[in-house]
Length: 468
Image (cartoon, rainbow, N blue to C red):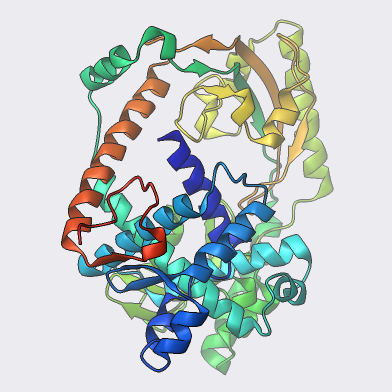
């Protein structure tokens, strides 16, 4: 099971962001095969067919090259293990279509756009991206990325349907733990509990009003003078995720946008522009381009009020004062967090941070976010960091914080009471894995599957090779 997870992780990274530009050719191969069957088979053999999907030999070979160029070892990703993973993905996607678990073109394109923006940020320009992936035009690159993302999104929807409602009871967790031989119980690495106190520089009301007035002016220009909302978004929006595409997003009620944004978006009619409204990211206006049932095509403009340097200096000074009072014994760190921290998510828990992976209070050193690790790695027991200025990765206002390591836990063998949340997660993963295996075995029996003769000797984790 661990080796399968490792393969999945490495392959997903290659296919989505760093990735293979080759595994999305199944539609081309299906279309071309009737026209040039003999030439196609000679040049590029068919490794496997899963329902309506074709996997070519070149898909495997070129993806292997991409993965190994990224550091994957031959032991982790062999030709057979990779083919098995590609067949699994296509089985999920095939069954998703059968079960009407569809993804819209807008969803796929939005994902592709985000990935392209990330790649441009990494290498510097679209020209360098095309050069890296050996593509002549951005249209060619977008088309291939579209096919990769569509297949992955269908696959993910199907997997989520299979395991989405699976839960484990406390008794199942206990039984899972007791089944593990004592000499095989997992060892959990050294961990930390970390608390923080946050101060967010205040935005003056005058700066907020400037932004509101600007957004109202843009709204009026679009409504009264037929100005292009898309052009206005390109010119003025401060949302890095949508600015380059005219503020465009496609969303449903399940899309992970903040509540205030979704509430406004779903209150508007097609063609309507909202009044300016505030979220944690700043001030927005939304234009509804199209309503498609429970989905919206919209454009929006985000503008953030300027925070004067005087307010930034004030927030730092306040944290300095709080830090000093804790060191002098006037407050405990937890009391100071409750009384002074601006972060609602942590202040009522003594400033205690929660691990975003499992919401536990412990952070395993080898799995910590690198930025957080670098901020706390040199802190001694009872030491409080100097104020740290931290930009909001989601685009909201920056904040200052002070950090303290409130508990340290050495590397240790799993203990049921102490590590219950981690053991619960392992038990859930095992139950989900069994459900996936049972589902896959059933669908292999019910779906057209053909594995090329050269690949039938592979030791697949699933029974892909049916009796002839």
